[in-house]
Image (cartoon, rainbow, N blue to C red; front, side):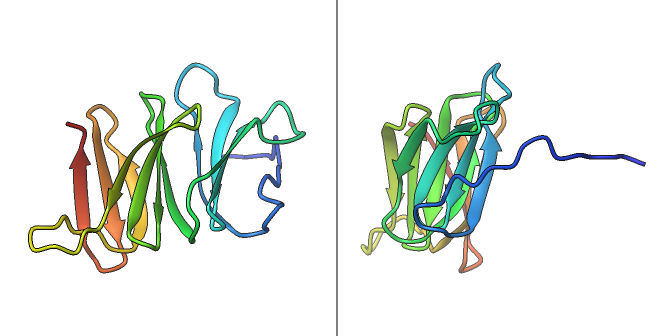
Length: 140
């Protein structure tokens, strides 16, 4: 039988108490750092060895944040919202790109984002939407 025990418990999203919708360990050689996203739209960068507060906060979305993905082998994260929007950030908090729905004839399709995942080795981002659509995006 596998026995697991709690080693750390944090409440980083206390300004606007909303549920945590995504969490992931940061890429690199420092396993003590995690990224946490709340439904309120903020993403917080935490060091689990320092229980005081987040060392970086990104106000990623004005509406409800619904998904978070952390790229395992590169210093980037992505967040998705119910407002048909995906944003990509560096680990320093800089916004690197946006994917959004454009209502034109040849528009890219994106629904209300329900899940995100990076490919482990290629620069690909998969997004699942509430309208049962799955899209894969590549960096060009």
